[in-house]
Image (cartoon, rainbow, N blue to C red; front, side):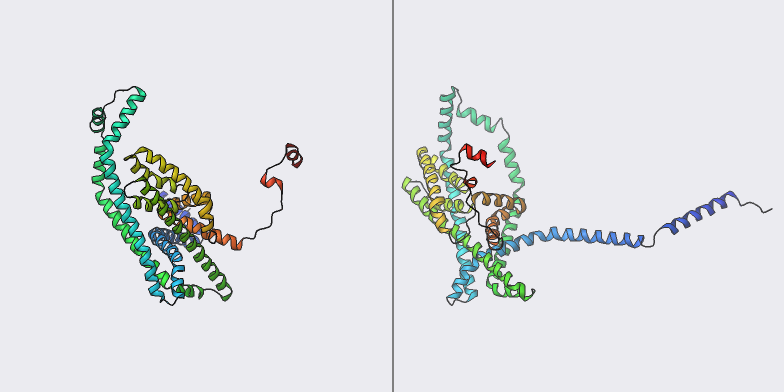
Length: 387
């Protein structure tokens, strides 16, 4: 009779049998699949990291492309008159940069002088406001009480000053980063505009001949509509600036020219609410001189906006793309939500281009005359019958 194995050896044999069964039951492809899954996950994380790093460059290239679309009609016009394309590009961008720098300088001077005037007139305005409150609501407020409440009982000013002091370095970095982005966008815009024919030829070389015509047609459409829309807004801005300058000068407001330029640019390039935003600064200036002037400014702004919407804009934008105000505001909101201030700036040209594409490629049908469309002049009996 054979001797039985010790218990330890029996347990070892059982463990070996279990491991052998486990190895035998594991599919041969599973290790390779796990390695492939980890490799794909690593590639996904690498691509995600690269996308986040490059999204800023993509945004700048998009801005540069739209700027080149807007400038190219002027460059093409100069080139058609015999001007070298490189020189034409330089002339166009010098004019654009000069206008931008002039607007920024004008706005800076205007803001500094306006703030100084408001600060000088602030005690008088506050005193008149306190007198009005006391007379209207039967109170006994004094300027000393308000000053003590503001500077002693409240830490709003001190905490704000502390935050500003702590964020000086961050503000400097933001300004320097903004300047670097502006220079980058300007350089690529110049390259794209000057080498527009080469760029289109390079893109078409990657496409079959049957697709090249469609791409070039879409490119021309984007140039015409984007440039036309921006030029029409620029013309409206010039007319608005001159009109408001003349009116503010008639009222005797200081810096009437700067205020007119501010109003024309903001009201023309900011959709829907631009007029109301632009009107705040002239109204504040008028309040420091004569509150009645502020009332006249509000009346003039409303009347001029009506004239622009129903007389000037339909004629100026007849040959370009006129974006519906509601669509323009929605596009600005979407662009701002996606890309911030840059997206809001590009929203309307992009919407104008998309609207032009839809007008070219989306088929539309003739609509028969039907009183249900206008819903005017229908009796109750007709409405019941249509049901």
